Amino acid sequence: MSIECKFPSSNESFLSSDPHAGGREMAERTSVADLHNCEQAVMAAARKERAARAALRKGIKPRQPSWTESDREAYEARLAHWQAASRALVDALNRLRRTGERVSR
Image (spheres, rainbow, N blue to C red):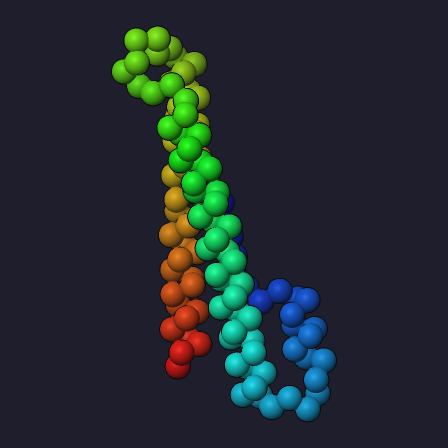
């Protein structure tokens, strides 16, 4: 599960539509668009992580008296989903940080 924060083609065509735009101005607009896309990716990843965490907490958990083998399998699937969502959120945050550092230079 990975949410990319890359430059979407719709923005590329918008930015390249002005043939008189200077290289620096174009790079600045591209960087700001990249930063915005990364922010959107972080928000989407955070929503997915919260939903996965809620699903993990909602289901039956180990050491409950009625625990069965099928409960274990379902719990492991929910746990794996939450772990993947958490990694995707961390990745999106790291991309946002790197993009922010690049934009601020």
